[in-house]
View 1 (cartoon, rainbow, N blue to C red):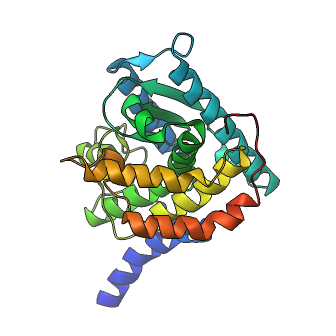
View 2 (spheres, rainbow, N blue to C red):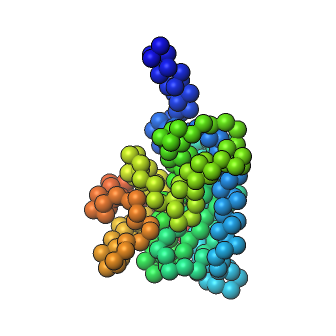
Length: 271
């Protein structure tokens, strides 16, 4: 009887596991991507309504964020399309906004909703470094890292998955979603495979930045600056909350560099 119970419990989890077509790693994904995109869009609009969004028509930094983000998203779309995986980006309607905040952070929600905080720009300092950050954050979304995290937490908390639990008034479900995806809270979820996700985002994000025409070598100097910012602050930047040890990260990035340089074709004088 006990064996039957575990079989019944394990079967849905086995069926929910799939091999990510880009990373090659098996992932747990209990929720349809369309469901996460729908809920993320609601959170995104709420966030924008409660924060000061910089206009790209009057703010050069906001225009830069949109320009860099557009190039990164095009590189990703081209990459997926060339591999015959274009359908995996269904529902992605890219938006890039700069928000006035001293917080050192950036994020991308399912569906391609991207926000950069002005507090990050003194550390990125240039377009190539910003491209490294956006490539990293967007990779988290397109590699379904959020779905993986929220699925693991849902199982750990014994959440019953049925229908669109986020819009059915399920407080536990919405709490889990906000802990993973909500702006400012998404970096707080530390799960066993978070480091794997971070290295995947570093690796693919570096490639996507290079494909978009940004020098991938800038990743090294950016993370050196970010590391120094963490050392000089009593409270480390939110962007560092779930990230690997700086030395380990930089060593990994250096290991990815030759591959990334193979994709790099400079575009314009500022890259």
